[in-house]
Image (cartoon, rainbow, N blue to C red; front, side):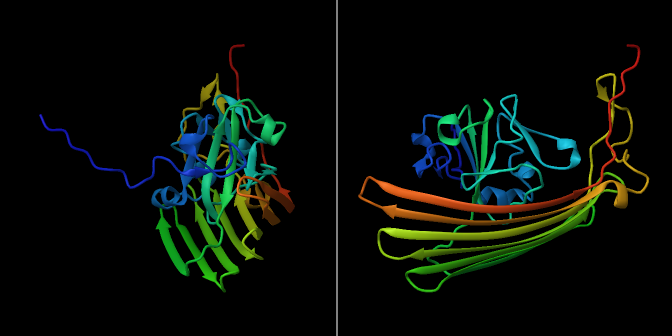
Length: 291
């Protein structure tokens, strides 16, 4: 009997920062950490965090009332346990993967590092950073229900001390659900400034705009989904006005790192975020019969 196999082109162990707030190999971290790197996001065609975590064990997504992405980790709601580069995200809007280097899921309590949170774990979105190699990636995709997406990723080292990276995205499409559509676009700018061998400043700015008709699913009857076509829309008769919303999410973040010695580093992060939301929604409730 001959047994043969083929090595996976994905790394079994990748650097993660969420579990320790410092760079560490995932195999060296005692806490369970699942990482979805950019190569996997690209191969899956993941456009949202829901797509990115679709195959992550112990993580499930819920409807979020149709107005946001919402996750459950190990059976506990993680609605307020999403972070961007280690800083807490409000979890009140839809996110995109166009500027993500990696999505990390830390399972179990992490209050020592992050403060208040659920017992299930947390999700940390790691943004793309500039690097030393010039690079330009342009990608376009078409999909079912008139889905169209265009992304641009440009990395340019100015000199040994300054590196710049720009990411842009435009995405629109319909849905298998009648009347549902979305339209979003984003722009992210990042720069790394190396003052000397010991002092580095990372600057990041991002703007993400999203407009869509909300999809809260189909109603439940006696604790199970109604026996109707999944394309049936149970919102307003005029969803464009009464079941839609817009969001404009802008973030600026500065991360200063100072190496005091070979084993000691001082790090300070400043983050400023604004989120403008406008929503109108017809809610759907369950129906209990014979009670």
